[in-house]
Image (cartoon, rainbow, N blue to C red; front, side, top):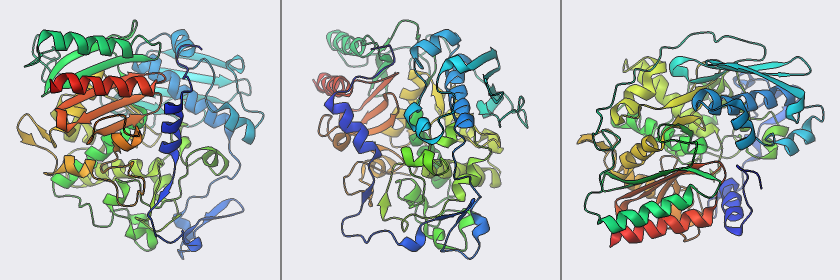
Length: 500
């Protein structure tokens, strides 16, 4: 198996099946067919609204070549522009085979399904893929907009964003204010055992970084060769939990409420006005944004956000309803993208920060997450459904913030009780996989394989941030591919060690 591949154990198959599964509240009626968007010609009309102009026209035929180039340009940019790795290394270790090949073959046999039909050019600020058809897609590194996927054929962003201000950490200062380990009350033997467990996670050809923090102190860390501690790693869908916390910051500031209608002007005069922030943060908006093959076959509303959309806010806010809000729990990109977009717009309207500065001013700067590199679309909307690159130590800072109920260095930044909210099963989820704040519940996801009351930020290719309140523990694992059974076993063993 090539490096970066994923073996197919039963545990991993269960995890993937369950994460994509849609779940309905027991006893709830089926979706109202009048809420479903119907395809008519080249437009999407929503029967529950007298104003179909709210729905952006979408092409029913998937433009596979454009999406293929956009997605793979972003993937390469993560490794080359975001991590500083050579193109050849990213291709061989992260993309030995192009992604979504089977889906694209089903929609457009002419799509460039192998690297032989694509040329790659890059400099320190951009990477461009050019197909033999002449179509080009470019990703640039654009200040606080981060990795910005440009429209087809474009070579420069519409607006240049300011660069983040990165303060220098005091050398030798313990984590989380610095980067140095501090074992706290754990005996040396326990620390050695934990470090050996982390080494197992980074020596299997899949894991690249692993960190354990206990009682607010950095206990142990491990990195695979070629992936030093200062290297960023994309969290993929673990980024959804970042979007949830960003929205929570606005709740704490009194600018958003969980149970009031979400402030989306496009929804004001139809059934979508019943969608609340709580629904969005529990994947239960009812919006029509399916993942999987259906996403590619019907306008690509889910994966397309990573393939260079012009404006994800317009696309996501223009979706019709597939089910009444709060009755259907479904894993999809619309809800975190809208949660983050609402937070940015509300914060900017209140004068807290310019839109491009909101994630830093409200979240990353207070936590000292200095390494963060986000992704954005051509309009500058942050792709906080799946593009947030940060070091393992910064991902651990995020986990520690959640573990500490939104208090950082004595300052409360989230509403009191946020951790309990995250750990409470989402109302519309009959399997209990989802908590609040766009987090997973670790024990049902791992079918009992991790301790009770485990919250989880989880992303593709095995990105995990475990938060274990009963053990005062944060475990981070980042990589390219996963061994879920090994990871669950390591998390449990670390919990046993710190429990004494």
